[in-house]
Length: 246
Image (cartoon, rainbow, N blue to C red; front, top):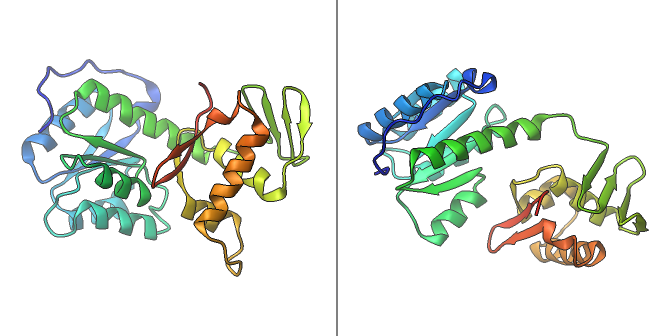
């Protein structure tokens, strides 16, 4: 169950008005509660009580984000997410798990499958809405044109020259080190698995193991230095997350 509370006030923010949220849960009271509060925030909503219906709506109605329970009749939330990520039409659709499954391994599984966030019930509606807005902002940033230069802390990553400067000094990065750093920095706040980095940055005919990514990340951190290495966060058993502001 979600924690009980009064409905929050509508945000009336322009970008939220156009967004459609698909809510997937087999408990009608949760569907009703989320629908009521999301609509008060200006969102459009769709609901599904099972995994098969959720997939049908995701493909036919093109929601902007899915709030997904794990324990569902028919296809469970894990399989729903797998299917969404396999389909080119929905592979980048933001998915936020909202579930009573609260073990660390469940959270790791959800993030490894490609969820944008994993939220354990109960949670206040104010916090849930904040996480929904954050997931939507991240999705918008991920689809925006990628900047030629990325700056964080005292670091500048320049795609035009394939160069990295730290405190104004040029620091030599190998091609792969540069590409990994740039890939992470272009997606602040997103959890990026080792598998994703391997698939995106290495050719299919090149044999690379997860340990290779860890070695590259270690070298990147060393070159960034003590003051800047903290921008790359390790999520044990999941992957890495870039934090722009610390």
